[in-house]
Image (tube, rainbow, N blue to C red; front, side):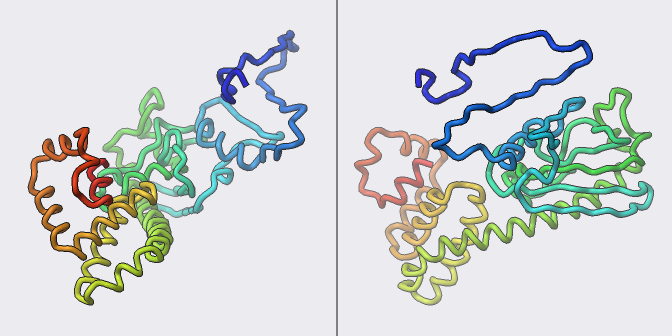
Length: 289
């Protein structure tokens, strides 16, 4: 109670005793758990631990005697094995996480001869405008490619960029990952669209037919632009879009905002008197973003 429910601030009583000379490792045991609460689920704990410690070298974590693995991360699973010309056999395994949890060292790690080389990467997809950055941060996996051994730097810290085998597998990995991310993106967008549509259908039906088509296209752009943001934020922007299509005066305000220097908008958003301005609530919320 004194630690405000934060275990990291709690002075845990620790008993220390000497271990046998041949023993190693650390065991954390949860005992005397409060029977009023649901016990921690091993599956959920492993899902949290795998993104924190799953890539650590020479460091294994086990929960109830079972080691961490890619299967412990909740999300869409993908696996590809193929022979790549000029590079030999590769095996790509990865997941796109379900939640928006922060994944430590997100990306695809390269494993050569059973050992991870360097840091995980997105194989150039971070520069692809069609792939949302927030979606990339949900990617976690690895590719086994023993044929890259000759391209590994002396300290095993990276792969030489112009290695022929690496250049051969890079577009193959890019294609597989981009296709998978596209599937996840489409699925999540459809779910988001369905939730948003339920709330906005009534307003859309009141628009003239020609404006309904523009409204749907505009809302589609809003959902893509704000992918990964809270639904509240998306709903606010969507509401402003519909305000602009419903009332010409709102459209005029948005035109003026669009044509104004960014500094003017920042000043307006931070002004102490902005809540008293005679502007639509949705637009005021948008300015505060």
